[in-house]
Length: 293
Image 1: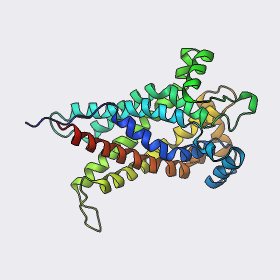
Image 2: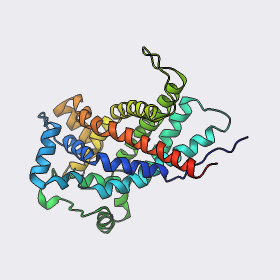
Image 3: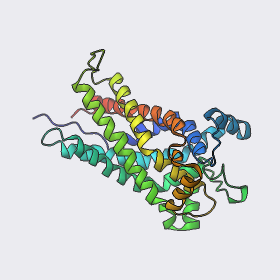
């Protein structure tokens, strides 16, 4: 029996970091749009234009160091764990979709815990708080490491797990809907030809792009409510319980607020998902060529 190909645990984190470098300005715009309260809805371009006019073009890459730290903790663990669990489940043949979905959600939870400190720093440095709060209440982190040190100094080790409940929920939803659905779409498209045009995809760049774009659409829709709620909690000038923020927003804006910023979220997450999986698949291909089983 041929030996199964294995890959480094950290490979997914590298692919996710490469994708984050490309889509960071879109991530910043999405977060800023989600923190705008009220019924008026500024456009994506107005948010970008305001950012550039007030702080220059470099402001679109505010918080990139925290974003990369998050990818090398959160995404590294969630992608690496999923591949490890999937390998175990596949010993006796291809596992059913339900088992892979559960594996993706468990891996997402592990990644959510590992990436929580970097996730909180990333939201702060993306100006979720700095863009909304008055100057005297802003964080002013210069980079991810200094922000991490300051967070521990000011709040202690418990500060590393600030917002863990909301972030963990989002991580489970994200990995289940993004990684789980990508695996499902990829497997389905390999087994069945595309309808109408009757074209059979092969395991190549086109397949990875189509499957990841579909996965990005599913992930954006599933994660939108938790994403908006997390951004609202971070932008608040005082500590609030998630349920209180949810009730207040529903009362003032209606249920549509749960999907506020869906378009910029998809514009960011769609390309990010495509790039992440394309980079990840190419890294796997390169590793397999360099270090065959």
